[in-house]
Length: 69
Image (cartoon, rainbow, N blue to C red):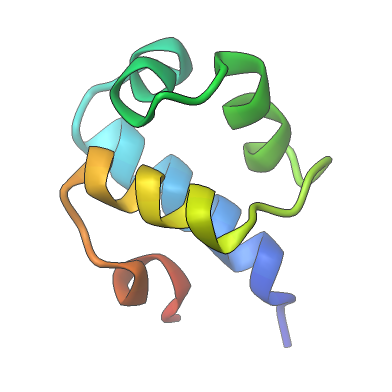
């Protein structure tokens, strides 16, 4: 079974690419640094709930969409 943080990272990448956003654009939309977005996507950092909420809003998806398989 895949870890939750890895699944969330993959879902963020999926929705970011679906919306044709760069990491930098997602960072701007979510008020997070682009380097942080990259670290989350590469599984170097585990995203916190507040930041997950900001990323979900920037991607126009629910938090559930980012955690479900």
